Amino acid sequence: DGGITQSPKYLFRKEGQNVTLSCEQNLNHDAMYWYRQDPGQGLRLIYYSQIVNDFQKGDIAEGYSVSREKKESFPLTVTSAQKNPTAFYLCASSSPSGQGLNYEQYFGPGTRLTVT
Amino acid sequence: AQTVTQSQPEMSVQEAETVTLSCTYDTSENNYYLFWYKQPPSRQMILVIRQEAYKQQNATENRFSVNFQKAAKSFSLKISDSQLGDTAMYFCAFSPYSGAGSYQLTFGKGTKLSVIP
Image (cartoon, rainbow over all chains, first blue to last red; front, side):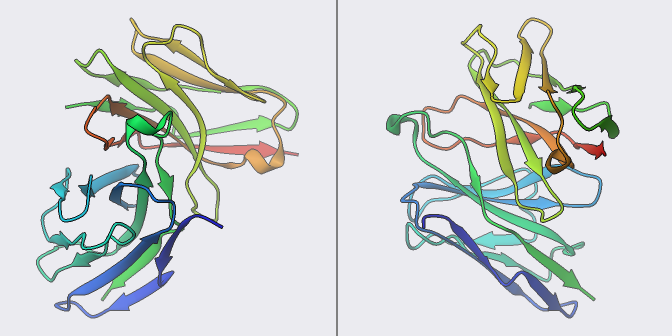
């Protein structure tokens, strides 16, 4: 079945360590996104990518980095520079508008990151 | 920059009754899309319904319908015949028309809906 996978579901790290969250999709979507969700908050955009080897900062990119070497994969690295990294992270993907009404975003199941 | 406001942090409804969730947004864009997403306790984000701003007709999906008032920048969600499985966080989201293939979403803070048996 087509979909988006994020692994692991729960991730624990010590403060000061970088950590990479995985996001893979087999929907053949060009665009991919990373969001952060905090308690009592909506989702906030961290980074997005329209095509391979290209990505743009979202609203809260500081302390994060991404890469897009393959169409299927969009990993997010939470660096030690991120002051409050503990959060729920969601990955999403979407098709370009030229492929019909596919501007909606499909979400993965998320990764809960806890940094102590 | 766009903002999305959901003024009802929590709501409850009796099973089989109807409930309306409110959403207002602020934008200078003329072409955009609006969405309602549902997030059950599993935390999986599920698209409930979408509305293109250029369409005057309100979108409907089975028991879910919207009241889109473009001039008032209002986008409310009505759930009819509420079911226990509708218990979830509901997020209103806005996306400007991109034309470049990506659609960045701006979310409201959500409304926690509880359906009471």
